[in-house]
Length: 110
Length: 487
Image (cartoon, rainbow over all chains, first blue to last red; front, side, top):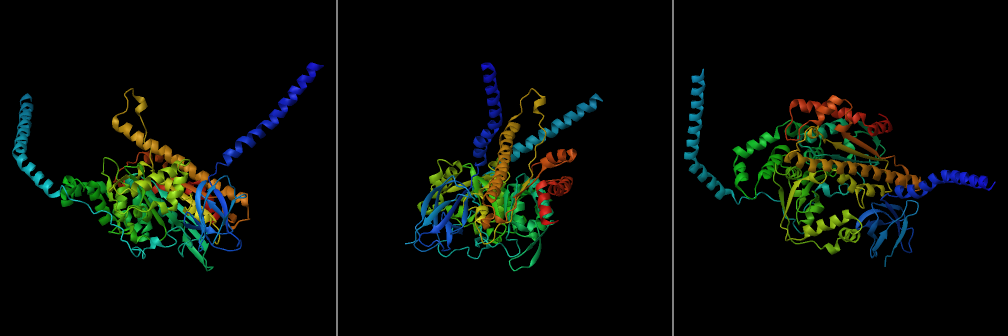
């Protein structure tokens, strides 16, 4: 009887592993491969003036507008500012963002 | 019979003897002639790139300085603002120039209809929509001609593709004053002779100032000291304290196609004063990322090398040594502040179509070395170690472009219609025009055996003219685009 029970448990375990296994592989192996994408995403706003529209400067070059999703080509450190007088540039390490979870950056204009 | 053979042998021996005697008698004269030429020409210098003039922007009138040329929008009035088209033409001598020419002509016959900003329907063609074109080695000539306009493109076929350029080069070397200078000068060499020929007879002395705002031209050579890509842009020339606008297009094409050993490297001057790199945000940002990103590390080294004004001269050789298909140039546009990212971030006019066209004239002639126990000779080994490894790297880059396109499109799926920048984006089109895709095995074999030289026979050009349009039409991504365009 005990032998039967342990065999049944073993078979059930095998079935569970059989079903869950590929799922585990998908969950653990697929996302890192899928997330190998090199793009990063930010949204830049002006501090205390969230509705203000201005050009965003990525490493000093005009690229996108405040309040809107901005795509960066690769992860890493980048100088971010806005094309407004007295804007205080920020040196930000942008990593592990997604289009749905971009990094929010506030630029202060003194 | 034996007598007549003996008499002939005697005659030949006598002729050889006379020739040797003539040579001995003439040698002092020849040596004197060579000495005089050496004294006259050993210090003869070529025309170098010009120094950048400080003060008001010298190039303010150049179309390449306009917003469109720097990757900003809107495009040219007669171009579709909703599309971004990037093309690259590989190296491969006249074969690459001919394949590039025919591919662009085929794309010119593909109708492209769009509505402009003023609501007017414009009947255009796919080739006219190209925003950026990269050229390497032989492909650099076609890319340049394309940027100069359709009239120039038609003339280019006669002036370059159908011409025996290597024969003209050899004739110029042996029969002209500059040819003698190239033989005896330590600074003016065969590549300068070639550059002057391209400048004079292919591009009518036009410089970078003659280029329009669109398409943006990316010509690539290889910096010998760094083993890195050298791109002929205002930014790279500014790092050398030089002005790209006054630099002849023919010279840049010569540098891009200076195949090692056959042609000497092309030399540029590196002028003072050095730039203040500490105020250059791209440099500072790259330096911060250098440890984790090898590409950024290389960029830092390149900037520091050019900024070190003890490096008085930059020697350039064939662009194909580091990127024989120009695909790295396309990959760069996916980076921060690249054309693709800037375009995606331009929310006012969401990007609808991203089209990448890879025109690859690469060949892989059959290798019979495995049939013999004798190892391949030095030349075979040298070619295999340079060309074959580069082909593998280029294939990798093409795969990288595909995966960057996939990433871009995945972001659209993530944000759905919530952000205008991705709202209308269609799945990017990646069109590959290459001999490996030829369906007819006989044609493929013939194409794969086309020579890498600066001359093609009429039959070889006819083969290219027949094969390339089919390669364009049969490409599945091109067919997907055609269906989208309603053609």
